[in-house]
Length: 227
Image 1 (cartoon, rainbow, N blue to C red):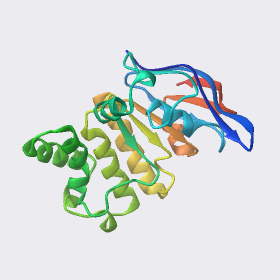
Image 2 (cartoon, rainbow, N blue to C red):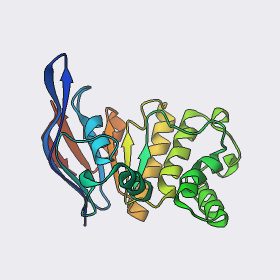
Image 3 (cartoon, rainbow, N blue to C red):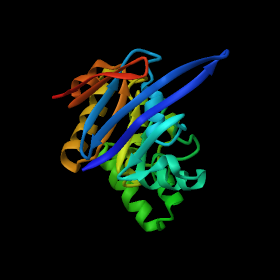
């Protein structure tokens, strides 16, 4: 089933009076269960593309459909609600809330969704066990390594039961061991639970794990390889 579809997706920035097309009429389709990496040099437009797919950035032209719904036509409040229910995010900088424990960080998105305390507790603990952090439930981010923080971020992204997860350079701040552990975990979730992952990355280790690699240059797709 097609889960993401972009049509003529374009983002134009103005730079000292000059128009720069960060994303240039991209047509893209992502199927449910894919494990896909978007790659390209810095400034190629891959993060901008990911941000538009995630509804974090407006398009100048074109549309983004998520599971058949055109998110480009949603109001700001509708878009916030849609993201909350449908899209999981994993960022390079982890973006955990420093004063909350690992369990509370994972619970937070479910709190916003209005789930009961019992549901939040059960799901957050189960997810942290799944990502190998059963002994870190009550640890705050500053008590965790970078790799552990990123695993909490993945658990948090999964907590809302999203349609897919967008991961923007998720391994950029991790050492090789943490990267390997994180990628193995995400690949296993993808294979066993059919969680759809879409990465933007420079990291060859992520690229090697991906089953589809989309290369972008100057805002355009120049190569799309399936493995």
